[in-house]
Image (tube, rainbow, N blue to C red):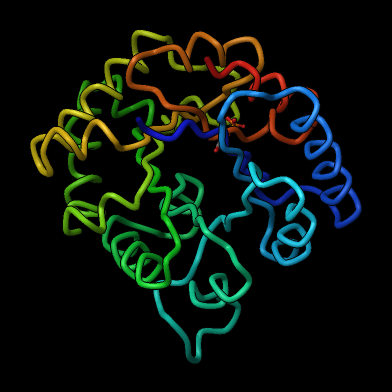
Length: 254
Ligand code: PGA
């Protein structure tokens, strides 16, 4: 059975005290309200990772991840944060290839591939984000775009290494826009991704790979999305910044 995950991508939001009180609220609410085996991963800004890992020690269902890492392991790269540094804090997950990184910071499938390699080398599971723009969807090339992101960014991995990765489909046109993919659109592309994994790594790997949906997922639409056969949870931006809305999303997991 594959892991069900609800992840909160805080992006560049929240001051230290706000981050700590949001985390404290979530710890309390998860303890009181969630009996199902759902894993929660929070992706705070780098600065808070260490403190939040200590804070979450009491709630084993909350893990802390990083929003990015360098495509180098160490050295003269001013301003960068390396995967082994994250690993030394006890960080177990990293987002790779989020569309904001691809569009504002020049990341591409090749740089994503190196980040994934370095993260895995340090026992950090990458959550590889794949996505198409509105223009690509309207031109009906979204399947080709996704296939290319898979082939160039992650399909170089061996079967064993790929089994430690998670994928997140996050259509650019749905991120922060209030426009969610319809259940049919989400299922169609998640199914396509799972089939592509099956072709490359076989049916066992495909059946066990966790595929998250991201893009204006909220407490109104999460239930329908999480019930889709090929959607195993969500990567939540805006709606993860308030404990009640994020909790309602977590509780939408079937
Ligand atoms: P959103 O962001 O939920 O605010 O649309 C999702 C993401 O970018 O991970």
